[in-house]
Length: 307
Ligand code: IPE
Ligand code: IPE
Ligand code: MG
Ligand code: MG
Ligand code: MG
Image 1 (cartoon, rainbow, N blue to C red):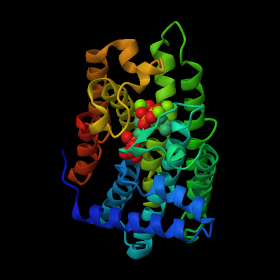
Image 2 (cartoon, rainbow, N blue to C red):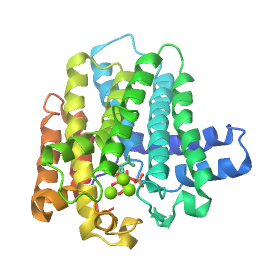
Image 3 (cartoon, rainbow, N blue to C red):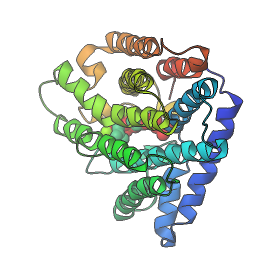
């Protein structure tokens, strides 16, 4: 769907190495470390790191044209990579907990047994806990010339009781109800459980890049539409894909009697809405020139992806 700029590809492989490095450095018990590694380094799409890096690179590219007091470029790249690692740690933790028997009770993730199946529930819970704190530890390690407090605030807000955790809570409360959720309620769930971290990924990349207010605002609108499109497509894929392609159990939402965009709107309308949101995301990038083309292609990717 898209070609990754060479620079971004290089940064992404740095992120893989850094994630590995951070888990190694934890000095945890072997079992805990294995469990963390199992879910952090098991071939996710790395969509949130891509967003964080792309957003940082976009702002940096624009700044390079207009400003002379540049941050040292090596330091800047390292900071963008750290932000990418931090959001991926939170994401990995959220998936481990999402799959637990007390939540979605899934046994397949990325084509492998879920963490609590491969290890056990207690280990999975603790690996999730440890990955969550690791996400914040990585930010705390940034050089002081970056706005660490702002970045920590963004990530905490997005992942906590006003963001991802809130969405997960309401997702679970709505399960097995005789009545489908109203669309506005479902939208709020999706914006929290998935949208918030996607929004934080884009914003944290932009903040590290030193984005102006208007650029941060444009990127935030982009990310909000993109995050909603991402989760609507996740709901669509649960219905139209197969477990092999998805790497997770197809039909899991139906089996759990979840309210999803497909159960509320029907398949075709849900897919249409995902495409609308993807378009809306691209429209939000109007103030950027061709340097934002990669971010535009990520918006296409979100609704064209098959897993
Ligand atoms: C799955 O996220 C969970 C949702 C928020 C929909 P991804 O589809 O990004 O999962 P991985 O990391 O690529 O496996
Ligand atoms: C999960 O949404 C969102 C998270 C915060 C992890 P889903 O429950 O739909 O994600 P999948 O389909 O299991 O990946
Ligand atoms: Mg879930
Ligand atoms: Mg789930
Ligand atoms: Mg899903």
